[in-house]
Length: 310
Image 1 (cartoon, one colour):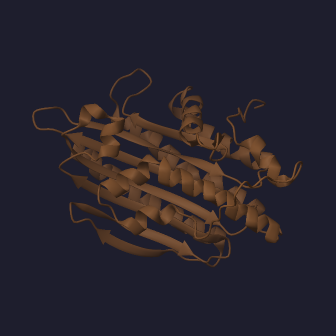
Image 2 (cartoon, helix red, strand yellow):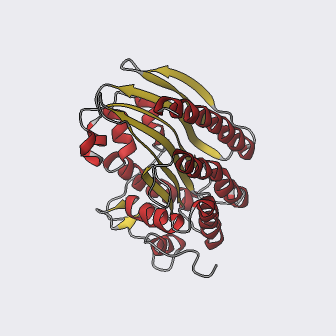
Image 3 (tube, helix red, strand yellow):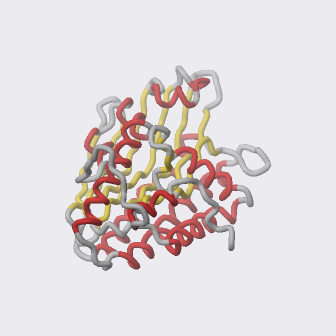
């Protein structure tokens, strides 16, 4: 199978994944519906951006599909893979961010993607990447363990090392050095996947693992939303949620490679920045009251083996 046959196969999966995730999130919200904006990119490609706003459960969330291509790799990609400078590229993926209304329901992010870099006279280079991560503001151990059990289940059929490796990679990637804390409680993050555990190029294996991670997102997230969406909250919890959303903004605008890639490739700005929360706030020298639920969050914002007892 050629690389472009690979591409068509992956695109079909991603568009179906977008449809399924949107349907499941609309069901858990109960009233909100995603609005779709189809767009084209002048330099090549386009996508389908779907955003749900002012739902009962989801204050704002986006589930985006895109396929973009061009004659030269963007700087964010060559910084990660400098050996691919000078190649043309095809990139497709589904990326989503959900910002719930209730502070007891965590924010969540997921992304799965496929990349091909080509140069005349040389073999194409292709790989998969993605993952999912959870950002609670008022964490519950049961939720975090469920999240990581589901992440482990997504990886388990493909090899014993994947969950541990991708969980550790997620902890490293979603880290704010200037705050000395993780963005949340982690999950999975992977990139450059194109081999099987024996180190052989293997499209079916890599695509299968990417699909499993994409397919497990709803299983990981929706049960948490169902458990927490009706918990009562007041102004204190809402203000803390908005304060902690500021950390999400800081990470996405300063460190996130996907945001940089989208902006550097001339992608649709509104779609790229749909990951931002609809409301956020910053407070100078904020310090939570000692022993409070807000102070408790800090104990979760460092890497931990959540499944040690399993």
